[in-house]
Image (cartoon, rainbow, N blue to C red; front, top):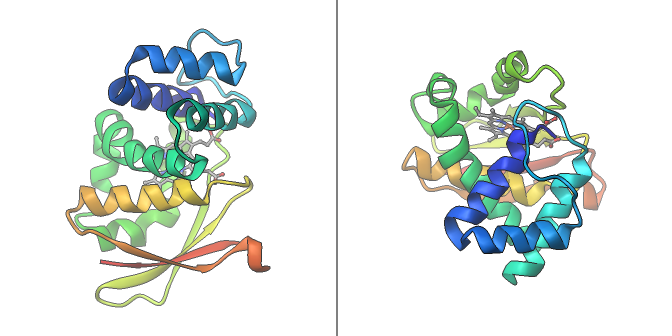
Length: 180
Ligand code: HEM
């Protein structure tokens, strides 16, 4: 994944837990990289090692790390670095989610080597819809959950999530019913 992702994890840890914890996490992860360059792609294993090391050092589960990271990604990284793109995504939560299937097309203009997620929308109601999440990667379901919770906070429309389809039960993708 692009260095932007690893840098965002670093930023989350340093802001909430201090620079010492970040150094401890980097050491524990065994990664031999002094600092990440946002526009450089790194092996996915770097990101996953950081998430596991963060869980060990902070004493929380990997899922909890990924949920926190998802929220941070929306509320801090995306809003501070790409506020214009985020605003163009929609005027409210429903609009943003309806536009999500095309969102990473624009990101690919900035990060051409992106391996983006794919999204589809179904069962649209006034206060809910089903978001289908297709990924070439494993283990990012809790990240997705954190992203959706972060969007709910961003639009001041708190969400509840129901995980309706999962690869662990034979589906070829994940789906969440998102209600607000
Ligand atoms: C301006 C805002 C955003 C930027 C710059 C961005 C950029 C990225 C980047 C660089 C990656 C790593 C993939 C790679 O390097 O190959 C990524 C992955 C991902 N993004 Fe975004 N993204 C943004 C907003 C969003 C939003 C709003 C969502 C959904 C609510 C989202 C969902 C995801 C997911 C689920 C992944 C994991 C990829 C996978 O499953 O394989 N992103 N994005």
